Amino acid sequence: MNTKLILVEGLPGSGKSTTAGLIKEILVEQNVKAELYMEGNLDHPADYEGVAYFTEKEFEDLLALSGSLSKVFQDRVIVKKGRYLLPYMKIKSESGDGFPDDLLVSISKKDIYELPLDQHVAIITESWEEFAKKAAAEEKVYIFECCFIQNPLTVGMIKYGAPDEVTISYVEKTAEFIKNLNPLLVYVKQEDVEKSFRKAVTERPEVWFNGFVHYYTSQGYGAQKELSGLEGTIEVLRERQKLEFEILDRLSMPTVIVDNSRFELNEHKGRLKGILKTC
Image (tube, rainbow, N blue to C red; front, side, top):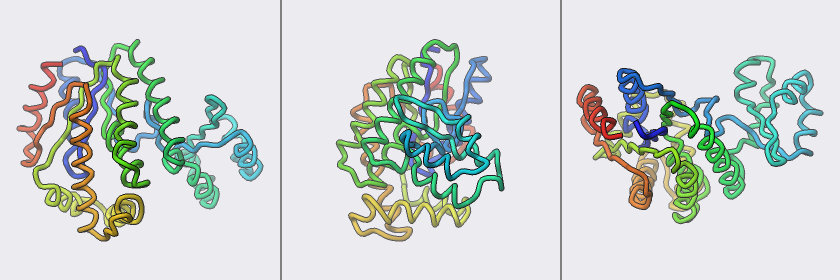
């Protein structure tokens, strides 16, 4: 297998998670060493999930307010190019009730995905560059769900309502850093965006739905277009998919669009097997 990185993308409810899991399953069946990183993985090797950014002064101020967690923060912080990067969600998961809620709220405001767009892009793309150098020397295939296209669009388009070219440039910059891994992009498509998202809504908790709708309509593109509720969210998703297809057209890496509208697991796995044979 020539590729060392398989990227799985698509809209929420399209079947990205299932697809990424099937790809890992197929590679294991073929005795290929593979590591799968799903959305939200706090140990992601290229993305920053649940990590906050501080300047040196800001970090010193944080330590002064952190009580018994001060030493933990000092031990766990990662310093890169003068940036203090704190994996606060991982620390929270390990500390439980020992991590005060008010401190968590304060730190989360400094999350890398809450930073101004240009600062966010600089930190994230540098992380991808570091990952690519490391992965190139390893004998394994990485499988990433959603972080290559979805995350840049979530920040650029959905959160900040940035011009399309700004968001596209973000993805293209990342693509340039990982080209030495001969990446394969698998895009999971649904013919009916509304139908697939409504299906996802019925399968997920209400708190997920409310948070998703709020995020998609209260800021950025959704707010600019004065969209609201479920219908407004579906409209944003349709526009997001248009931008994703434009990005697919502009990327130079091998890309396969897989229609998963039928949600037939065995059929879907068979198609993926065929795709992976060519890698």
